[in-house]
Image 1 (cartoon, rainbow, N blue to C red):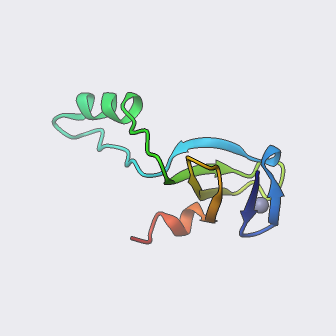
Image 2: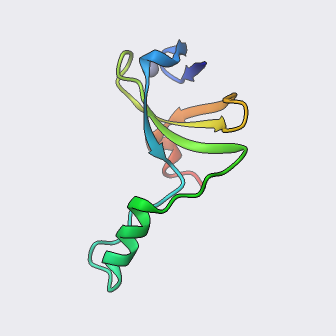
Length: 90
Ligand SMILES: [Zn+2]
């Protein structure tokens, strides 16, 4: 599997580390139901079949955090962008 790093180009998977689901949002720690929301945030995950947004870290390259769109059925990489940009786009 190869990941198209937006800074380094197409690179081998072994240069990256998977860091988790990029579709969940960290709960407000000051919220009234913070404990229940953190339990769900940490332990409850969907298991989607198809394109999925994931955080990856390019540790053996530019050391950037990325959001990679990967098809969980085929492992095909459908896109990658810097996580900082992905977090502000809808
Ligand atoms: Zn890179």
